[in-house]
Length: 117
Image (cartoon, rainbow, N blue to C red; front, side):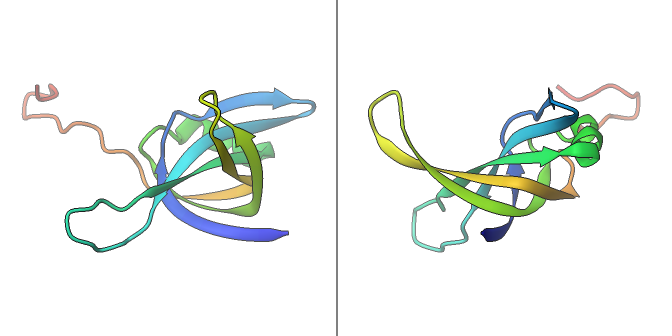
């Protein structure tokens, strides 16, 4: 069993589902490498994350797309073939434990309480 710890942004709104007697929260996290090279952006590695039980229930109410999190859990790599026929490997984190680094910022309100355009 390989464990991994990553920090990145949630790429889609988490989905909370019932799984037997427990609940499971599923979402994706993008972890960008810090590679400094001229004119190139750092590639992102995407991970699918599963959180179970009471933590899934609590996090399901507060996590959203864009939230920066640190995830620690068991790394599972599984091969798959895309719709285009390209073979690749999915990086999944099972039984994840999540810490919120920062929430996605809401638009700032002006002095009159309305959001800017």
